[in-house]
Image (cartoon, rainbow over all chains, first blue to last red; front, side):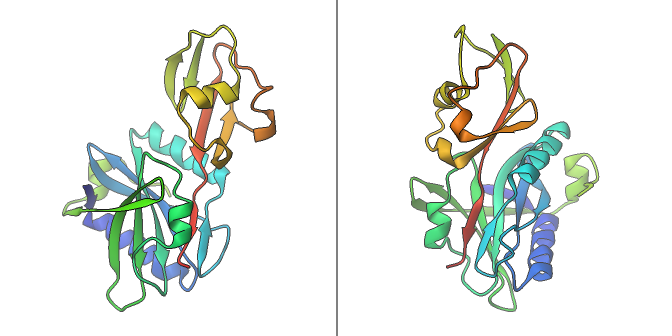
Amino acid sequence: MLRIEQEVIDKIIEHGRTEAPLEACGYLAQKNGVVCRSITMKNIDASPVHYSMDPAEQFAAVRDCRAEGLSIRAVYHTHPETAAYPSAEDIKLAYDPAISYVIISLAKNNPSIHSFIIREEEVFPEQIEIIVGTADARCGQVSHR
Amino acid sequence: MQITVNGEANELNEAEINLAKLLDIRQVESPEMVAVQLNGEFVEMKNYTSTYLKTGDDVEFLYFMGGGSR
């Protein structure tokens, strides 16, 4: 189960809407088992149907999280025009066995968000528990990103 | 040999170890899909086997992230 602050969900939806019609992407970081931080990453593909992260930015994000006592829990990206389900490309490129893959669909007025565990090209839907609270307070510090 | 891997201290029994072997020990199943930094510098995959580690080295690796809606 992915436990995530409502405030974080709001932020990643806002990120997606800002980047639309391009896909948006980022990391979700947790503390004490709850995702309390979204880390906006640049989609170096700058595409409406693809995303790739910049490895240098990935390393920086991971180090920043570690320095704040956070750990990477998931990666997220948006599907501006399609459903919140992993595409064939999403499945093929899901190499990291240690994280969840969160997809936000902006295809309808009301965005939908789903989390998946993808292992060896098999997709397992993951339940999301939304936590109401103050994400930055849970993380312990205000995000600088 | 003591090194740091992804921020955690690791004591390795091997007297000599290269990056390729380290990724194998860490059970990285798709090494071609990870990026590696040694002491903050990127190491190209073609150099994994020739890059030997020494005590105090700081190794970071992570998976490339990408996908798409089609």
